[in-house]
Length: 448
Figure 1: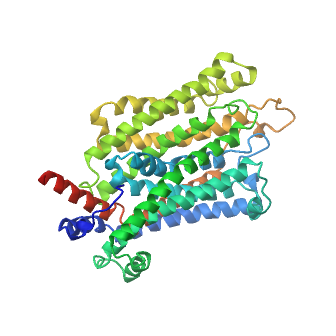
Figure 2: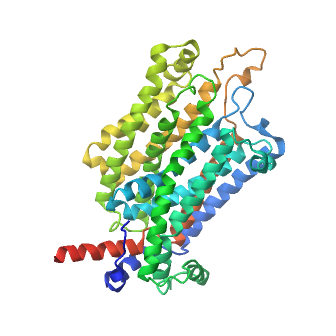
Figure 3: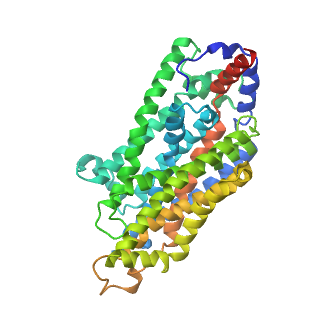
């Protein structure tokens, strides 16, 4: 984002064209209502499943004495991981001066807001007594990584929301008077949220300074959020978790999952909203290269994570690795490594696969594999404790998620999709003022 804004773009005739294009899909359409109806009906079934769990307790799940963290915690780690893409795109790449991220940054921030918000709710689903959640804040111990996690997740959500909303303010002001196709209540919402923005140079100076501060502050916060999440496992003396590289291991995995999520949303916006003028082949090509880069770094940490214990082959680690490589979880493990990491790296080295449709398909596979990767991190190690399993029912020795557990997990995913859908349809998904300013600057450069 530039240090100063040339407000000459407001007088440029291209502003009307850009605003018209980007605002065209904004509003309540029949397709939107049908899609939201489907999501809400599906979510209601998942809420009913949670009511059953709340009424009867965690006994309706597959969680028992040995595997006390199952699908819910894997889901939490997945949501936290994917939310980090807002920091990667907006902060790291934005502050480094990569201008191609401008039309993508808001998409990344929407994903960050939605996934960070739902991540907090996922923790509630794992609690047998959710009414005791306030006790974490009232009586939390500073020595507990759980308190650290709650604090950084909340902080990251607040910062991501501000990074989404503040750059949106000029667009809300630009959109006023161009929203005739939308309901009156939405026009009134724009009027309130634009906070009397009048496009003065002083306002843009304050906006850019505020955004820059947020972009800098959110980087250590984002690193902290997933590092602390990794510590929840790494500080526990268990085979598969007792690792000092879990912090960077989780962070690089987060960038892979988040980049894949951004590509999926880019394809959706480009195809359904007809915004291929702003999300071009170049943007998909660059995102493909970014996905290769973060995947290579993640592959490096994967090799370290398994090669070192495999070389030493301590008794407990040997049992754990056997379960992953050739045992009960072998098919899931190798599918995740091959389909979610190695094959995407190889395919994306070729330019053909960095086009929109191939990128979309690859990213869907990568994102699904990312979820199962978190499942593999959380569950198998708990099924192989140091103490022998004896004098317990056979059903306690193997973790199997129940229908109730699966429905509640699907409910959190549906909730994230609902938040993203609402933000996509009610507000400009691509920054109008930044696109207009960039177009104006390019025209001036071409004339020189």
